[in-house]
Length: 237
Image (cartoon, rainbow, N blue to C red; front, side, top):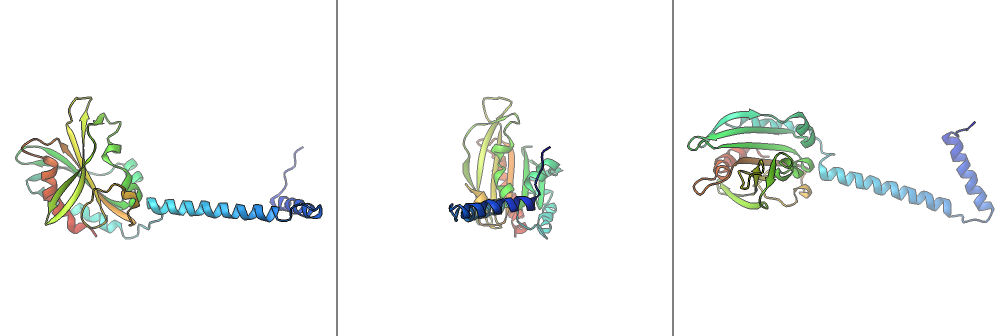
């Protein structure tokens, strides 16, 4: 029959072994040194966990922040020459992944050309909001990125906002048919940040616009953003 010692009995055995080592003229510092190393290891592990939690926003308190996100529902149905055609919400899986305090997802149609853009705005902890980009979201969804992202500038109310733009082909077509523009903000101008996850703020806003590829005469995403960003700006804190 196998007998299992209780924790107290195990501790007594450890102390007996240590006493025997001392009595036998062994290394008196071996056991204390081992315990010290164990304490240091635990401290380093806890520090690493806290640092990771701070980077991804896990330790941020969401109290009252939902009130800021709730403002997105007040965005208008008419944005310049664009008219609302559909309003949606995050599915359960995406909401769990992003941990948003608030979000708004809409589709608008341009009155003159009939072009449709999808506009999404999110507010939540820095970590999840920072890492989910169109390159990640569209991968495996029948799309293929056709060029590296590039920085775009959209001037709105004398503010020069910087956004990333990227293009995709769909259904293995040889030419791109979809573009997406995206950026982050801590409450100020929109920024095409290279490393938004290390931004020195607990929370971030993110916008993501998707629409048809630009032609020589008309860029749907750029045109929509020029009218939409001044409307969104007062909602940022």
